[in-house]
Length: 328
View 1 (cartoon, rainbow, N blue to C red):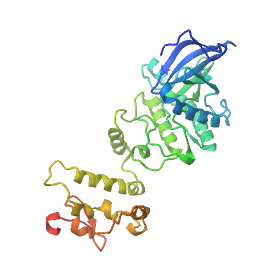
View 2 (cartoon, helix red, strand yellow):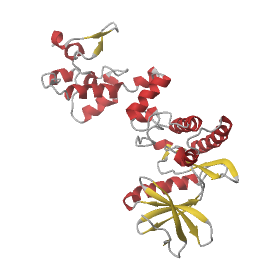
View 3 (cartoon, rainbow, N blue to C red):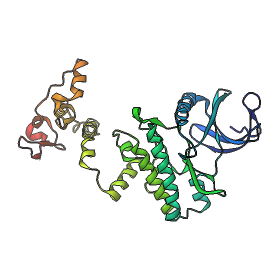
View 4 (cartoon, helix red, strand yellow):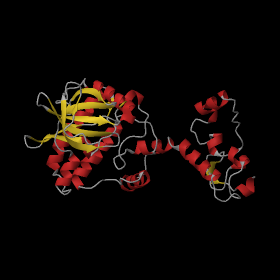
């Protein structure tokens, strides 16, 4: 969508000077107002108008903050052109990513990183005070205000992925490589995801390289575990139900039909019996939901049906492997 030289908005308010960049949902252009003030205008794809309207609500919330004191981009206004939702912002300089490219990925000095870190921590503190989570912090979304006049003065931009912390359950956030482990693992989310991504950005500035792989969630979490060890037991416990479900799926989708789990065996699987849940099946919200739909999830003796690849707890609390052949 090349609109260079085109006037947009009623009254020829903006003239597009050049394209600044293109993302998944929008294009950003450098524009000039009739007042001669240069701004950045984000043109959101016409098929993403819902996302554009949602983003506008995030910027309205952001107006509760002083953009200069809180180091966040100044939102000017929004309007519509040919069914495109358009957002106008103050015009900033290069992103941290742009600067790294120009430096040939030469790392920043620790003293320089400290200056950037302090400003962005102020940003995160301010966002938390109004219950807003950015959810997409990365080098591309941290902009230098004016590198010549104010070296290393930065602002956080692009709140297109932002969420209110009170209603935050979207796992399609953050770039791979900057994605927090709780996002990858499907755990409860809060503003701590922003602190994780800020940490990965600062590491990128220090090393000139991405801290974690950027092409795969699996590779990213594998490297996290290699570098920082296994998650705490409390975190792993919260994954028990998901892991049990995956275990059952693997048995149901076995390529060899003779080794595929049978209905009788599946009824005794821990995902169905909920034996793996710490408070037991009887107190589970899941069992109540199942009963309301008319499904009776009667507990079957696990030791009768568990497959040879599963572990079960015996009555004295010891874990033991049980063979299907010897029990069924």
